[in-house]
Image (cartoon, rainbow, N blue to C red):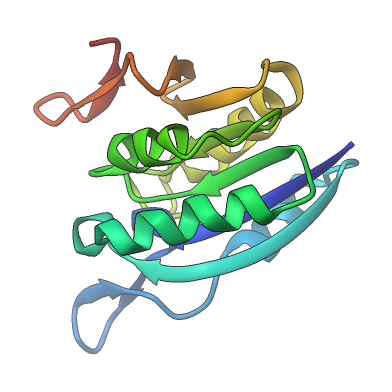
Length: 162
């Protein structure tokens, strides 16, 4: 089994800068996360860009979709910010990625911070990418959602069925 992992950044990839007192991007945490996870499946990793999902544009979403459609691997995980991952899922679905299992995940707390949900969400997304039927899915909070039947509950900080 081979899985392609794309990252778009999001909170998942943010790192705390103690000088500025802010969260920002430095480099991807995915290679470290893969190593710590002791995976026995092959991961092909490709960063697309590093953005907070609130800063993503429609062109960014089209870039993600185009890159997925051009990818030869059929099992794909996308690391994405949680605020607009549903929008990206719908854009990908509209561009009809035939025969591919696409699982989008993110984190409410950056991987670089001790109490992060990133590692769990990443592992869940990898498992889902191996088991689900072709389509566009979101894996968050230990659940799997179809792209058309999910929303982020910002009051609770979790994803739920619409």
